[in-house]
Image 1 (tube, rainbow, N blue to C red):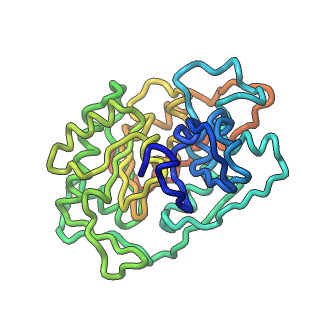
Image 2 (image 1 turned 180 degrees about the vertical axis):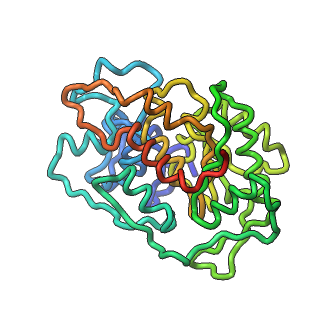
Image 3 (image 1 turned 90 degrees about the vertical axis):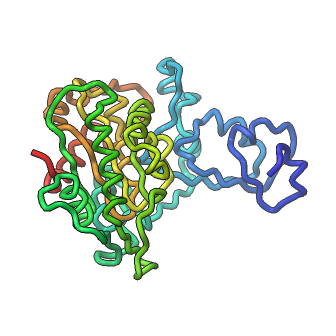
Length: 335
């Protein structure tokens, strides 16, 4: 590692953030690989594009779009709108560029790949790289026969999905009961000695804290979950969808973005946020949510403003949330 390219000694490959590359005043290279190109803003690409003769853009169009902390509506629809992703801007100005789609997911198991593909990638589907039975999740310690937390874990282990449903209620964003439920699920998963059997390890491996993630929409929700989790399980990753993007775990626990809300805002309905949260797992995903989300969606139909010269993105968040809820319904443990 070095602060300047000149100090690296001429390596074959140089790795750096877009912000770092943009601060360079000289030098050029034959090729660049731009990772997470759909999350990179187009203005960031403009600042570094002149350094490279050619580039390979790698990314996921179904996940979170670039974001800004300032209002950007005045540029919406313009060809120089900086809130376009780097990949979208590139294709908009060069429609004949070749696009290669990967047909297989090696992260998602067969229980999840069809759900995620049909919900978030309706025009560029994919399938799981493994088949049913190649992966499994089990426990070395028995649970309580009538314990709700244990029932949720066993449902997730058996089917790959579980919905831990709490009573319907409008709550503060930092819903203490929901945060405690997320922490309790992670703690119980460790107490019961979960064993994950991936396709390349037929003997199985313990699901250690670093192989568990808890995802939420907001940083204050993350802080509340961490407080309930305590120091004993500090190795469990707890973070927002934005920071979990690109990572993978054996088991993920998701606090649903619409849980306990009175309204369904564009932020909480964003399909990319739900896509990230429900597609980080290799074995199982558990969603924690208060009852009533379906009714909330019905009361807040999708009504995103339509802007000229902006391609319509499919699916919209309202449709994606309905589809995920329909898939989770048979795996609900609660009422």
